[in-house]
Image 1: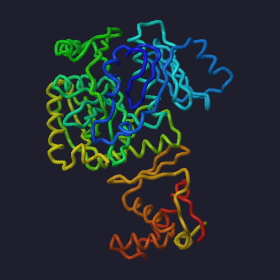
Image 2: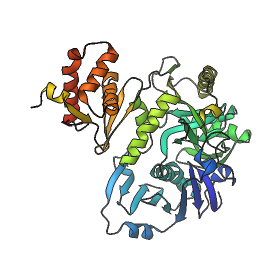
Image 3: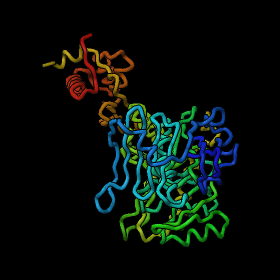
Image 4: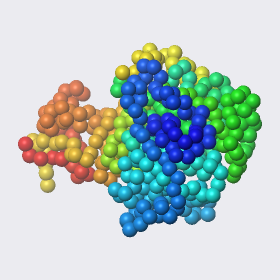
Length: 345
Length: 98
């Protein structure tokens, strides 16, 4: 993304600096909802967010004198804080991740100031696209899940799993099977006026682990991806991304434990609401509005989205799992009378 | 101490700051002040809905629920009154005289 407008995570991003890899998501006029989806973007502009670079001193000055409250802290392997979020009330939020830098988000979520570490932009921006912008999306009234997603038959298929359990690998495997990529790691959803949920495209970036380098190579060969760089055992790849929001059709809750077992995909009925709540992104934002929205969205998922539990032993390779997931999603689609258009308002 | 009969003659409403949503197998009550969730079985969830539909009249809601379940109201009223009292103790229901 060159400086200027782009759309990702349901937000209109007005960035004053380059975000490598996001240009694939940009095309002015794209990023709008698919016809008939009822995305408010089709009629109204998405929440606009200004992104600027700033010095560390400027960020410190913004919170100087204000009483901060730590609302989230993630510990690194050594037990020390590796990422934090501090709330400064009506002033805003300070986000920090070790090795990546800091960001300041005003309380309304309209402006983001980034003070990155001295790193190539593709590298520190993993923090920006993976944490800061999704955080802003939640602040601006959208809801987010820890999920990678692709589009199949006009609907989003979300893959929910713990870190390291293969969300990204599976989404990229599905992209290689011509299911357009929607996001990696954070899936932003929004209620549509018709009662369903729509899934917004993310950043068009994926992080491929060292042991999945072959996957990055296949994406490049297929003309679907472009590596931005490799660090810390991961290759950051800009991939071709679906341009617009689509109805959320299915969620697959992937569990890669259970070595020696068999691959099992089971549609959940009823859907356990706590499983959905636990899959939401950023549990630190707990304003009454956010908590209510989080519950609403989970209730809508339970009512309108096919939710599957996938028990998959580690020895089952991603291509085989991708095929099984597509079969399950297709069977669900065939059994459902609703079309994407019918699900829209 | 409030007796079951006193609760049945009361009005019970979900207070501001508490929301609930019905799922297929349970209803989740959420205290927005504490962020804590409380699960109710379908019967408890239905009672909440009936209280909302009936201006909080506990006895009317209990009688409707009993009718829907095909049991005598007198048979289930004490248990449902106790259920309302427990929710009230947790701040999830406001019980007041009619």
